[in-house]
Amino acid sequence: MASWEDVARIVGELPETTEASPRNWRVRKKLIAWERRLRKADYAALGAAAPDGDILGARVSDEGVKFALIADDPGVYFTTPHFDGYPAILVRLAEVGVLTIGQLSKTPGCSLKQVLGSAAAAKLGALAWNRDPREIKSHRRARSAGAQSALGRKPAEERIFRPTLLHLADRIGTRLRAKSRPGRTVTVRVRFANLNSVTRSVTLDAPISATVILAELAEELVRALLADHPHEKTISLLAISVSHLEEHWDVELELPLGLDDEARRPGTKKGMARWAADHAVDRIRDRFGWDAIGYGSVALGISPSVPDEFRKLAEKDL
Image (tube, rainbow, N blue to C red; front, side, top):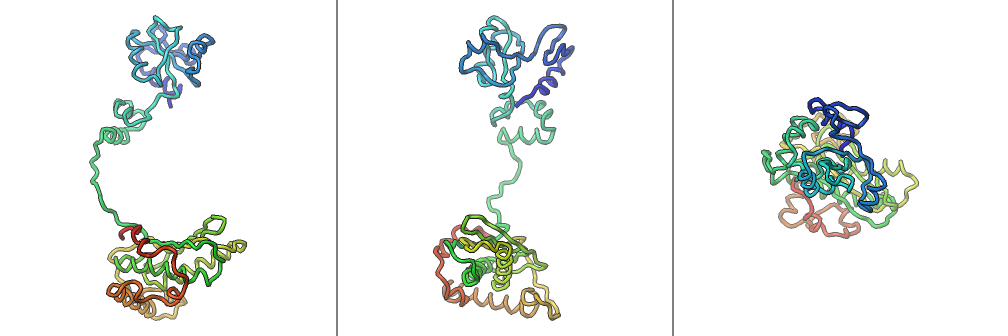
């Protein structure tokens, strides 16, 4: 949308132009542009088509140019019987501007530069003509891996969320290990019965892909989240996602210092044992299928409402 400041800037660039009075521009005392408010006769002539907002009156070279402009873009240009026989046209300022790709392609480069600057004007002008030097990338790897489970309406208790989180962690961890892309940030999302959702996340020093480590971290986050919302007694959805994925990451062994989180550090003896157990599970599943082996709390829990085979169809390649 154009403003009177835009009009003043553009008209002011014409030689020998003066603003004789506010919004009244002349060249050697000859009126060339002005604010033209509609009068009663104009409203009567235009009827329902009478525009609202600011209107610019502008002198053109002849009536042929006036009618050509109106025919080309009647949403911007118009006239009234008052200007019959005169080389002047009325402009709806609110409609002036670049609103479509077609208008952008027709806009002179110098005009775009004045508004956008040289770099943006050149780029947008080229894109309007479908000229784009950027390389087309047909395949992009996902930046995170996630899974969620709709529960219906279940009580916010450990017997409900623990097996669900382990099942989700199992699905995510299997994908991460298959592509050798452990992640550093674990995020959980809990949706309550009133459809409000809350998230919590933690970023680790070392990336992880072990199922049990991921499940334990998710459980801690969910417990903390529920403690912050004691009035919420019902949950309807649980979700886990792992982001900040690493590529070509090698496990760094750690000394047995007896740290509290030693079992969750991938480079410790316990962490390596969990990683090795997961890889054994992965090899069995690769040979005999997903249902051949699993974690007891998941296998004995409530069956998921949607088969995992269907869920995999929506998963992006890591």
